[in-house]
Amino acid sequence: MSAFLTKSMARNIFYGGTLFSVLLFLALTFHTTWKLPGRIPTATPAPEVARGKSLWETRNCIGCHTLLGEGAYFAPELGNVYKRRGPDFIKAWIKAQPTKVPGRRQMPQFNFSDQQLDDIVAFLKWTSEINTENWPPNIEG
Amino acid sequence: MQLQYKSQAVAKPYFIAAIALFVGQILFGLILGLQYVVGDFLFPAIPFNVARMVHTNLLIVWLLFGFMGAAYYLVPEETETELHSPLLAHLLFWVFLVAGALTIVGYLAVPYASLAQMTGNEVLETMGREFLEQPLPTKLGIVVVALAFLYNIGMTILKGRKTALSIILLAGLVGLAVLFLFAFYNPSNLVKDKYFWWWVVHLWVEGVWELIMAAILGFVLLKVTGVDREVIEKWLYVIITLALITGIIGTGHHYYWIGTPGYWQWWGSIFSALEPLPFFAMTVFCFNMVNRRRRQHPNKAATLWALGTGVMAFLGAGVWGFLHTLAPVNYYTHGTQITAAHGHLAFYGAYVMVVLTIISYAMPMLRGREVNPERAQVLEMWSFWLMTVSMVFVTLFLTAAGLLQVWLQRIIPNPQSFMAVQDQLAMFYWMRWLTGMVFMIGLVVYLYSFFAKDKPQTAEAGEAQPAAT
Image 1: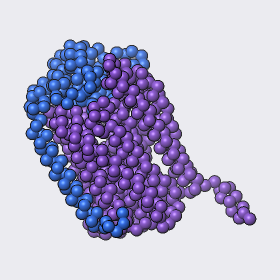
Image 2: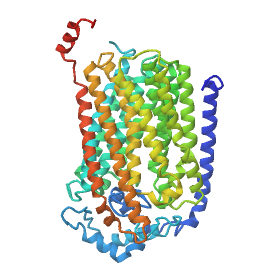
Image 3: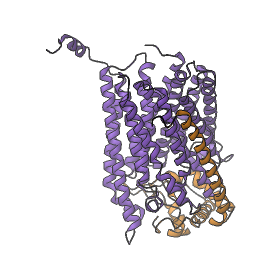
Image 4: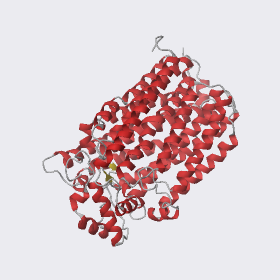
């Protein structure tokens, strides 16, 4: 980088390039937000789905599991668990924790009420119906 | 040896706190690594998710301590004026440390759901999202500390000399604070939640943090090489231009499979394929400046850290990022140990190492000496190699685990379940844990190097020996 590029030229390219990138990103964001309702099960998640999401968050599920591939990699993907296991299995599984099998990874007991279990399942069902461009590659997540 | 500006001294507690929290982060990393193979280790006292929160949150907090310390150290020298308010800087240090410590204690002492209830999460639900697990009061505290910190740094730059380097640092810090505000946006629509969550996470580490990193590296190289400021600042502009042009649209590599439109596979793939460029420019920059140096700075350890940052950031963030960033590849690797491998080497190579670089350069002067004694420097360089090489191996073992995981769980005709696959990765997880232990040894050597003195008899022996004939 010799004389052909001066410091002030480099600075101007930085400001111009950044501004351009930010505007392009905002435009794409606007378009994505506009397209989103067609890609999710319901444009506004139902109250039980929202409650399920709160439970998901306040139990820090993401600290072990992935959800649509994001999170920790210690426990199975749950974005498609509704399709993999179904609602009854999910509830029974949550109620049966921890397994206490020596040496195995353990999930805490959250003492959910039936209502809360229904909410969690509603959230996982909603999530499993998002258009994820066919990810994950198979049902195992 | 006196500091050029006495208010630079406020950086010292920031660096000490950063190192202390770094130790905590690694200890919890070792717990996590063991839980991967001994699943019920410390359960139910410290479940995996709790240890992971502590591990990642400590990392973020200690890097922020490092960035703030770096700013307090380098801004007075760059602006050629004392810090606007050293008192405010001291005050913020304690606020941030106490808030951070209370948060970690909260994670460890109470179930997360109770912590959420105690701290008013229902008022504004922000908790329970990866890396943004902090209770609402902590998040608000971060905003207050960030604003007051920016005020302090901004006022200092306003009254003093305005160098490109300090403006770039300030731009990075402002970006960091502004983007954190998206941590408060958590709609019940999961796709939207995820979309804007990345505005904090991705636009921090693959956006504005690169500005901070470039400024810190530029400052240390300016000091240890004596190369002309014009040359260094021109390089900085080139690096940060590449960083933001590739990194902003590069956010798209997180929008492939979370419900966002398919065109993100194109935007994300193309732009994030270019994301190694700014890191490569940093590598070339570091070596170029050191080769053109006009002085032999006696702090050899700091020069080593600076060069190491240039190389490892490119490897970890650039190469390991590129490895799985193209959409057709990412379709198979998304959310596997490949991601974990990249995360470890990228954070270590870029942000851990740049903070250790500025600490290595500044800490001796903050302790009243120009450089550390020879023996301390040798030990510090040993710790550099121990930590860096062990982190490379942590990354290689996780990559191997990830490849096998992808193969067994996502590619073969009869894919196996997650836990069935995990059982078969145990050997790699054990190897990762052992190399993690080596990292810990490196960290202990690093800590010890701060207290190492030259042996008096060595110095005498050196003097007693007449020059070889």
